Length: 310
Length: 255
Image (cartoon, rainbow over all chains, first blue to last red; front, side, top):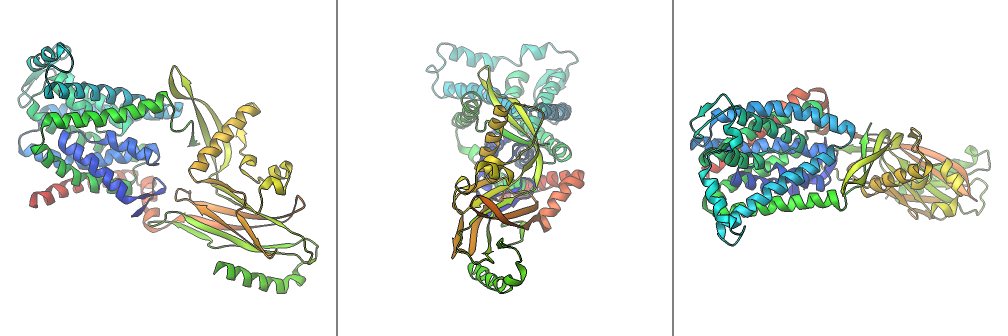
């Protein structure tokens, strides 16, 4: 099924795009991440111009997170209070991100920076997540003597000492927290910048940060993360529509078609699969993407020469 | 069918040829299988057939070579080159070009350098090595060469540049035809096809025809909306994604 993309200016196989949407949709349904970190690189790999890929992926992530937010909010799984603070930070972050995006594009290093960010973030998070999943599946075998101690420590610690040191504490009932709103606000800013630069929802960084840095109750983490992803990607779509004009509605529509379906399937899978197994799979996917990007960065880039219109 | 068409065309023109041709030089009568390429749903690229006839009023048995060049609209671009910097590949050098054809394909009856010398090839821009890219700013020739090669290689792999050394078929010394593949990622604009009849290393006759490449209907609408009504376009994209996410949730709730 050939589809012509009017903004990307090329024809693609629509079924491939829909399949890609399904894959990322399943990820988002299962893990509460948007799946943008998978969409953007794969779209670029498929030949879509990088800016169009990032912009349209943001639009897709909005759709994939909507149904997740509804599902979780019915189960009281969204902390709107802390979510609102993170969204506020995210809006500031998205605008900073837009400035950075244009600045880096003018300097000519936008693609390099995006690749470095991908390698660093995905590599770190994939590694941490994979190690933790392995430790839970086979305690004692992975991570040496520190494995048990590390686990107990995570369970005991409420939130990172850095967060505890911030002033003006608020009570966030659903998250079970009494912390300064500056923590989630800064998290929001960081995620907003990343979303704008990388075309990702930022769930893969937000979920671990909520768990291990803010120390939010696990019950509300996925729902609140999706809530933030929803708002931040909406904003990023608007910013892209204004600045880069690279949102391809046809591409986004195809991706959406797949990902909203995938998200529903993902929610079902999440219901019966073992969380450690799921986390191990996500870690593997994340690491593969990170390695692929690292290869392009360190060994041989896909293209030595790139062309930009003047 | 095209071949037949070309043949009839040749006959018609041949009948008028004595009146038209006062000089000794042969006349080129070129045509293209389609003068419009519409970028819309279902477009996955096209094969453009450039055909025509070379009419020799002197009626000699000279064997002409035919070269056809199809060029897309020119645009100013910046070419960046990645280089290793502390172990990672970053963009290091760049060169700006004032006018680079967005599309360039050349087909010839024999390899270009068997037909003409380098000087002629450079004058008529015959071949990917002889594109006049007009770099702005002063950089040394070796560097200029490297960038030009990088650019040509990149565009060749994107299907936007091509050189088909035996892409022109000549039958009975009169009719010629060349198939030029157009990929789906071409830009809109006016494309010019130039046909050259070459004899003894000299271009003795040339003719041009045009192809218009444009978006129409829905595709044109989307492009215009994205550029002229960015706010509503963005809102629409957001609305669409929220709606589709919501609708999928409702649908699956029924299952």
